[in-house]
Image (cartoon, rainbow, N blue to C red; front, side, top):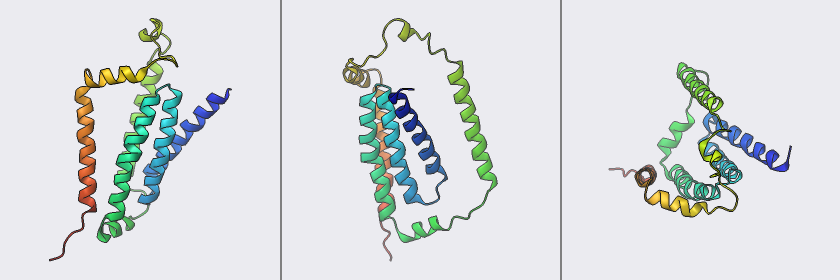
Length: 177
């Protein structure tokens, strides 16, 4: 096994473990910081997939935008909201079982779709159009973003604006009469 494969498997396992801990952690601050680890390790996996632009964009957008807003919303929120977060009762509930069943079903669908895909005989690989290390993917991404994928690009910008408004609303202090 080569060093690149070892590094990829390390980042893949780090992504899976930290994402699982983000979901299972009851302390919100630790969960947010584990989300940082998840995003950075996922960006490293994008680098291994020769998608360096997506890796940098993910770090800039998520770490620079959404996660910082989540941290500020958490730190600036009022004490009643924070005290409600600390009173989470432990133990297993029926809603946990439903969530686990949904996650297991989605995992089954994902694994079955990946196993059914014929990766070796994909048309864009057979025609010699595979991405090489010397291709200028940023130029192609720019063209596709502003032409073919303009609507999804605008939808993502609206979602980011909603996250900013939500963070501002959560961080606003209520005035007492």
